[in-house]
Length: 277
Image (cartoon, rainbow, N blue to C red):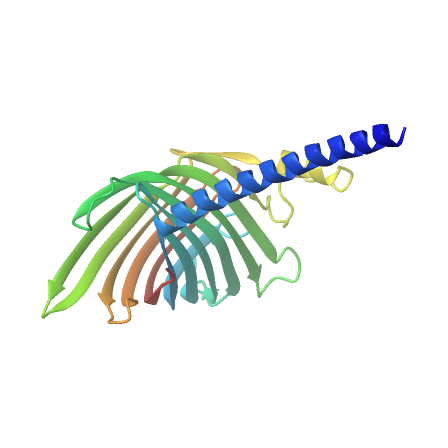
């Protein structure tokens, strides 16, 4: 009986040991793959801040344009791989906007814009890269002259093509790089305030949160709605392998489902590009 128990125990121990060795090999193999991918890639962080000349119109509470200067900041993580480059951009802007008769509102924008560009593994040269983008942006407006219905907002998630042009060059023994990135959103969904009130059309306190979310969603379709952007940057390479740059950007959006909302912005930013690995 004791021999039988010992045999069973030894058999289970061997099986457990085999499983541990197998899991260790799988983990080691995964680590080797991750290390190889890491060693074949490079990463950089772009930090920028500046000013944005911004104009917006929300016909849900006014047909007049509101414009002014906003502060704008971005943080972009860039991941370079052998056959593609990925950009993950977080952006924030805030400022006071006025119409022609002096009424004002506070406008804030928060967004996440992703780009994926595909290319061949070649030395850096003049090149055009094509890819796709995903834009997620939330705009909120608070009118300073209204006691009721002063808060308005809209949200967009959309996908579309994007392109990047790179031009590295030298001047006076200094290294520079010109980069232009453009995107055009094609298809997605939008949520925005209804007529006068802050709540979207279809929203009801009697509905559950999921029901309100689904009823508030409206399609974003290019042709009726528009969202596009263009950014051009000039970078000066430093001896530390980091770069200083100047970026000029244009952005335009028009959401025409329901109560139309439109905006246009042009920004000038100072950029610090930090090489991570």
